[in-house]
Length: 370
Image 1 (cartoon, rainbow, N blue to C red):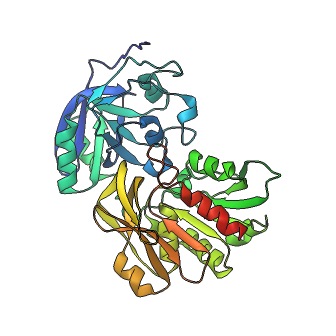
Image 2: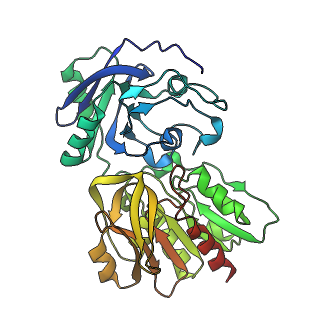
Image 3: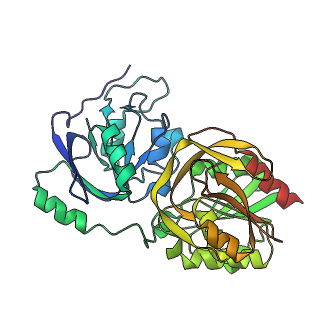
């Protein structure tokens, strides 16, 4: 077992929600102030993968599982180069960690990456409140500020509705993943891609070139890829006309196209559907989804606060519903009629999470080969 000295162990911290709800706790991570939309993840494991998922950019994450930090952090478990969450709320934070392969403590990791957090919060009470009231902005503060000062800062935080965030997390320059001698070339539009997604595609014999979010179809097509992939990512898909246009042009050329999460929503927008901000998003590792084509159910990993509107999907007439979320009947997957395009709202790479849906990567590779 390894230990770390938590300099914040006795320092008070405050969590203030936009509606005035106030929670007291203990400071963790960096001393400071952090604001963003508050959301919760119900996963029991995989906290480092969650914190480094670019889809969480600009958000304060509440972990519903009680014990956080007890297995430390490991460099190989990053889904991007650094944590993308804005802040962290937990119940029981562990300064001690026990794992042979760990590279350090979660406290040191958060502090190093300037993540402000709060522990000793009744997260069951908080999650029930957020569940009932819906997603809202919040602020964590471990500095000496009055409630009035904090309320003023919360009011300055922009709403996630209408917010374009992919350009903040996308790669600045193109880069390659996989074997350059592979038989298949896939162009990846990085609107917030997770590392494990790239690994799954490359492990199936694909050579990937990852492009900046605002790269045009014409620029990507100069590489002569065999297929295209639209990644996950943060923010409101309706605020990304550049990505929608790129998806439309890929479909016009009838190139193989696979989208995940935000990429799924972008494809739907490109086909005439609309998206909406959910009362509370789906964020966890155990969301049941039904594949309407095979009739089989899957337990999936999900992380999204927007969804495709089912009514407009049907009215558009160009898409077929392929998957539904069994908790609330929201759209979980689609394919475009007469095109080599399909997408899912959830994360088949499941890092962290179950492996039920990894067949979708094989489906994409087979589509390209055919």
